[in-house]
Structure formats: structure tokens, C-alpha cells
Amino acid sequence: PEGLDFLTVDHEASLDSCRRTLFCLLGVKECDTVQICKVIVAKHANYYSSSSPHPLTIKMVVDHAKFLFSARGQFNQADEKSIKFVDSQGLMMKGIDLYLDDPDTFPLKKFLGGYDKLHILHKLYHDFFPCDIESRKEWFEWLRSKFQISSLPRLTRSVVLGPRSPEVLMTEEFEHILSYCPYVEVLNLIKERWTYYSIGSLQESALDKIRKMKLKCQDGYFRSLNQTYLPLVKLIKKVPVPNAVHFADIPDPADDRWGQFKVVGLKMENDVGFYIDCVRSLKEMEKPEEKVREYYKLIQTKSNEGHALVNQRFEKEALIYVPPTESVPGYWAAPSNCVWSADISLNNLRPLKIIYGDQSRLFKSVLEIRDSNITDVIRELKSVEDVSKESPFRALLKTLNVFQNSFSQNCEIKTLKEYRIFPVRSADDTSQIRPGTDQRWFIADHNYLRTYFQQTVDLLDFELEEIIEMKPLFKALGLDHKYLSTSEKQVLRYQGDKVPADSITKVIHERAIFLHRLASEKNKETVLQGLLKMKVWGVDQVVLDRFVEVPGLDGTGTEKLWGTPGSGIVLEETKQK
Image (tube, rainbow, N blue to C red; front, side):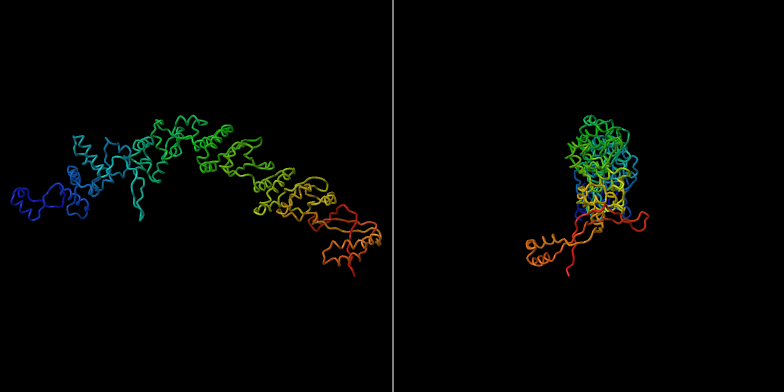
């Protein structure tokens, strides 16, 4: 063929045996097929159109390939990567970058006709064996097998990105196919040539692009492949309503080869993900109560297939249905916004234990839905707007006290003191809800104090047993200064003259020898002497007046609120001279 960089002896001179012998002695090589093949390889390996002394024309490059084909039995396979070809624009390039448009093998232009970066093998390659169909097939097959020229769209290409190892990426032409060709034709292309494309061995980046190709679903909408289901009869029978899940509009879904598409995300099993999709579809139903229970049971049964999937989907899509009550319509919620169990005082919470008690493994073990906590109680206390009734506050404060172990970790609890949440019984026996910052009410922490002050002082309306139990709460709220035992002040009044009580003094002196034995060893003598010197005095009556000081009603100064006076015996210590 033309275009090779070597000289040949004149044909007539080579026919003369003597001259032929001379040329051989001078080192002229015999021009055989193997030698020509080597020259073609060298020419292509070192060819650069700008510096070659003998530029190659399109016809020369094509003729080189034809010659190599005719000499294919003597062509060294190791030299195949050096051979270049010409595309339809006259550009020279390696076979791995070229496509052979062979309609008998594959309708390439049907898929890539609109792709303007496609490099098609020059039409002159098609003129070889124009009438011999079998030879032409052999010629095309030789180009494909030896030089990696493809008649099928290439799916991946090895790309070197910097110093790292080559990375296998999806080709631009296949990305074009995924974006612009009818999805059914693309699916059939992959399905029919699954092994050729080695789909199961693709790197994640290429698989992900196939997963995201758009398929038309039976409801008319297009969705990513990995969001759709194969419309199998076994699945269609289990959905609550038509199009409850995204069934792809795929021909002949019973074809077993569709099963290969699991690797790219096409769903075809009634697994936990399928039933989660069924629950999601129930959001469109007006009354999903009965169906949702059925699917929760199925999800609970299959939850071992993927706790993480169940958690992720339920949280992201808010798939927990809370049925309506007389005052609140039904709604869908995420697990993070639900509680499993809660005290009956928490009216704003709907504990799922009451609704879905037989699905505890799903809601407690898998979705890890929490029980109510201190934050829920605080939030509800702050949210109550109707302060005309004391019962919700009494119950909520008692519920809050249950979380004593959490008081030190919760900074919000101290803010409750500013809210009107404390049931107070006024001196006129009326009930009010007042804030903890109101300094005109107190906590009766002893029954006798309640008896003395209940007619004159406003008191927290809890029984003594409840108050004693709730002392940790009052401390956390910063209300322990309101205890009457620490707030009351006392004044003694004596009625009648003060006279010696000699009989009582005599009894104490007589028993001093016995009483001092109760003291410690080092204090016995001191105690004995003190008892012997003791004198008792008496009056007709001792009156104890109690009072507490509160801010004045006009906002200035203070006033004293007196309790009921008490009478009895009082002991006073008289300093010894």
C-alpha cells in the first residue's frame, strides 16, 4: 500500500537473478508481507501529521488496514494498539475511540444520531467487500475484535485523573443515551446485552447514573429507576390502592431478565421497603386507620431486613399516623415527634402505646420512639392557656416531680417560676393560678402551720403529703424560700404575773442525778450542775403570735399577715450569772 516510508528496487531490476543476488549481498531486504506489516505499524506508531515527511491520506490509512486484514495470519497481535484509523471527519485516532456503524449488528444512529461528538469510522472502510456479505462481516468483526472499534454504544471508559490509578467512568455517549433516548429502548439495550456491559461489575459512579435514569410510571409521572417497582402480579395484589407504589411502565414485566436490574435499584420484592412505600401511599387516603395498622404489622415482621432503612424512611417521610380524636384531626408524624408512653396529664401528647400497643417491637425496638420526658412536661405547662381550672396544673406539676433525676441537667425548669402554673388557695377559700414570682403566697410544709395561716395567707393548694414528696421540685424551681417554716416570724406574749414554780423546780433537782447520765462522759458534770441550778417560773398563759411579711398591695413597702394565735407552754433559757 502507498504512504510507507521505505524504498523498493525497480521491478524489472529485481527480476534479474544476478542483480537480485547483488542487492541481497548489499543488505537489501526481501519485501515480504511480514516486513510490510512492520513498516505499517512503525508508520502509525510514530505518525504525526505535522512532522511526517510523507503525510498519509485518508485512502492510504484505509488501505493500510485492508492490507493488515489480508495479512492477518502474519500480523503480530502485539502491534494492534499502534494502528490508527480515520473517522468520518478525516481525523486519525485509535480504534478504541471509534465506532463502526453496522446496522446489521446494531442501529447505532438510532441511539447516538443526535450526539455530535461521535467518531464514526470513515465510509471508505465500508467499501471493502461491497458484494461479498460474508467477507464483509468477517472484515467488520476483525476491526471490532482486534482494534476495539465498537458497533455498540460504549458504557464506560478508563480515565486517568492525575497521579491516581485510572478510574472507570461512564462515557459521554452513554450519558447522552440515558438522557435523550426513550427509556424502554435503553432498558432493552441494557437487558439484551447485560453480560456484554458487565453491569454487575460497574463502579458505583456508573451504576448511580443508571439508577437515576428516568422511567415513566403507570401513573404517568417520570421517576428515577431506583424509585420504581417492576409491575409484577404478586406486588400489584398487595398494594392498598392503584398506583400506591411507583410501578414502572415496562413491557413484558414477567421476563426473567428484568431480575438482573436489582443491582441498579429496580424493585421487585414485597420486602420491608415495599410495605413502607405502601404506608406512604396511605397519606392520600382520607381514613387510613385500618390499612395502616395492617402495613405496620407487615413492616414489623420484615423489619429485620433493615432497621436503618425503616428508621430513615419513617423519619424523613413522617410515616407514623396518629388517628383523630374528638378535638384533634388525624395527622402524620416523624418518630422524633412521637412518644411511646406518657402520663395522662400530658394532654398535648398522643402516646403510641395506646394506639399501636401490639406493634411495640416496631415502634420501641426498631424506630426507638422514646417515652415522655421532662421537656414534654415543661413544654405542656408553658402551653396551657386556660388558667381558669387548676386540675391540669396540679397533675402536670406532680408529673414533673417524677423526673427528679433530670432536674440538674435541665436549664429550662427554672424558667417555669415565671409562668402562671401554680394552684393557690386564697385566704377567702377561692382557687387561683399564679406565678412563682408572686411573693404573696406560701407553701404550708407542716399541718400546724396550715392551721394557723390558712384563713389569712394564700397557700399552695397541695396536701402536706404531696408537698413533702414535691420538695425536690420546689428546690429546682427556686421556691424553697416560700416554705412557711422558714418564712414565718413569731412573737411571744405573757398573760398574768411571773411567779416561781417551786414544785416543778424541785422535781428537776431531784431527778438531775438521773438525767445527767444521758450526757456524754466529758459533759456529765456540767449538765448536772446546770440542772441543779435550774429554776422554773410560770405565768397564767403564754400566747404565740405568728406572722409573715409580704409586699404591700399598692406595690410599696410590706405588710404583716397574722396567723391564728396559739397558746401553751414555752421554755426560756435564763443566762446564769
